[in-house]
Image 1: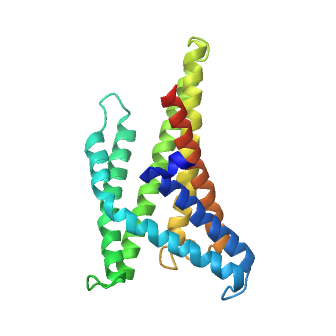
Image 2: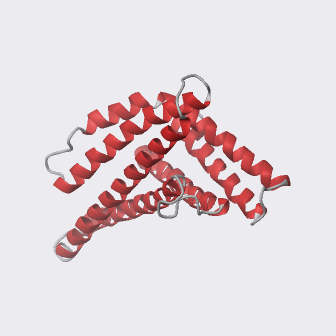
Length: 228
């Protein structure tokens, strides 16, 4: 835990997990009552403050995202064309997300004169697009991995099949986090679009907590593999 908190990404994962856990607990304690009171209100207030903290820290994520986008470019030539196209579009959505969120943040803080709600909506829509593209990419990769396992079931060595199964497991986890985050992103869009605004607080917290724990697990697994 100490090692994770010493890095920006590690701290963000922990703060994200605590943020959604507070929303889950606060929403569960509040129940159908409006507005929440007591401990439920305190937990939901803590969740909102931690969410605002993460939004402030994301002011400095643009260049890291830009580096990732340029590093991937149009993707390696030996990669599936559909996967490459989805990845490029996903990177584009991520790149556009940050400046839109920054404008919304600055408008809320009174730094710029703009309607913050409009920019929050645009940034949330870009987040939803990014998650949707990620889900489609994971489904495509899983289809390819399943076909690879089926075609080489008898001819591939055991080690090769084991590596492919590990890739399948990692992609399934990405698919789960993408679907959960997409569900929450749609919830935060203006009411009237699909299930926007219809999730109770505890469900938003539950989905976010699950994805946060998966992100922490993935980071831990990567750290162990790099150490080996």
